[in-house]
Length: 234
Image 1 (tube, rainbow, N blue to C red):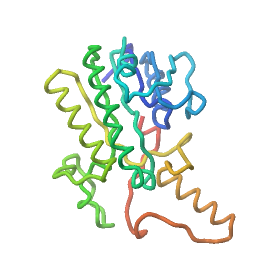
Image 2 (tube, one colour):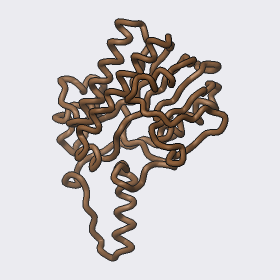
Image 3 (cartoon, helix red, strand yellow):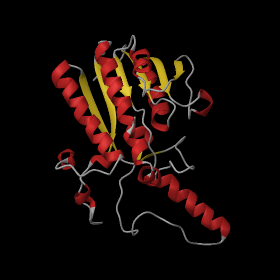
């Protein structure tokens, strides 16, 4: 779809994917009016000049109304998330992101937004289909019957359903993408929120520097993962 000339807000713009998305949208002719993130501007991964960069907590509906005001497109990437270590130990915190998704959908409806993009995750897929290292590629339909990652995966799957019903009931055109381990420049690499590629790199470097040539990983080491470079993602 040609989005040239449309106006947009990117929610979660201070994050890894969001920062790249703002620049990609501008390059494709979209007028990004507003970039929003809960982090202070000094903590954003990338800040783009010529855009209204706002530090707002989108769990608050009033802030979502501000974010959605005057735009035709909403890109909803804002969430509390991280790598396996983070989502395993912060299930309630991850679940609270449903407030962001709910309030942004409500704001988009109230502000007559044309199209709504929601960033979901591979964590929505049924875990029983992912137990063998001899991988059979997942299909969209493999999210059901539902058995997603506890906490984070359930929040994502529930929010996908909300998008579906906002489209069915209110005519808000919604689209969802399920990300699989996105990596690249400006990605998180420490602090517990990093994804597998950066986490493994950091652990190997630390092991090499320390002389203790062992690292800890999640799982038994035989699991298969899919990865996507940031340019392909945006």
